[in-house]
Length: 324
Image: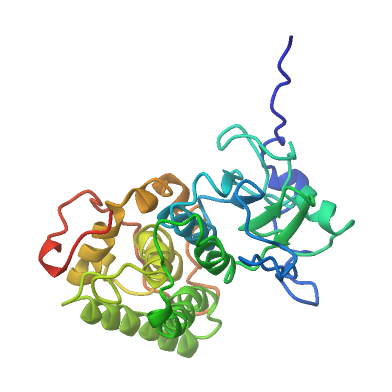
């Protein structure tokens, strides 16, 4: 009996297929149109069931990593499966190649095949994370902001950790919005700034946000004290990319993450937890294109990528129990 070889896409080739984006991300309409929800009682049409759903993710995307970390922290590794697309894209979008392995669910070579299976001829953005329903052979959701919530709440029957405790849920959602606005979107807005005034204003905003969270974490182990919540995941996926990607690309500040004593120790503290460490590949987080050219748009400060020692002792044990 012969075993069929895994199906892989050809190598990323921008010369042949063009860059990803034009014609996909600039179309009218919602960028993330698949908004299905998984619920514990199945009232949404997508009941939480072990083995039914599959998460397509990427090591490069912070929001895909956020979803996988939540899944792992919640103890759902045997409940919701995950696989990874390749790090490189061309005009075809995300693809499955040998570096990250094949698509174990459908044998697709391009993630756009999952989108086309859900909406034939789908013309829009091909994003990760994607939550796939094995039973219906369709995408449930590509709503990156909500997928972690579905994973962290709908599967409570099988979960071992609650990252959205009811008594903190409103505060978690409010802090999530703040982190997404001031840091997640903030670093992107610095990179896209078209004028000197906009660049200076936006980079000052990101720097002030880092100072704010550094102060918040001075006397508490996690954002909400001794309890690790989804907000910590939301913040961490940005921090882990800051020195290697966001700051060198956008020219935000000469200060690396390592210069924020509490924030840097907090980031290392979380990195010791397997869900954070095992979903991180620093090679996938590095700057692959140069920072904005000084002659185009605002004059930016030059920031070199900084590889820090993430295994150095964090020294935060006195602030509370470590999450295990």
